[in-house]
Length: 90
Image (cartoon, rainbow, N blue to C red; front, side, top):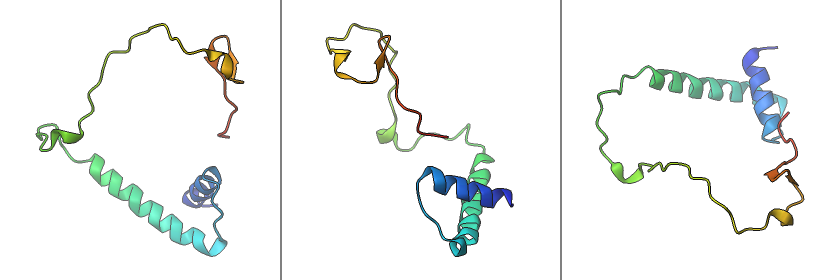
């Protein structure tokens, strides 16, 4: 089986999307085109580029540990003061 076809099938499975056999090759081509585009973007040298629009910049803050007044007893997924959730990705 083609590696790209296997990836398309895996992505469809993870996304819980049913794809028909006749759609698979078209999706392989589309995903390959997207991957090639991002490969080209990653080759660009943008180290010296200045930011033209600062409206969408994310301001990072230092993580600070503090006591919470929220009761964690409401959760069925609590174990040792941590949330434990069911595994959803294979």
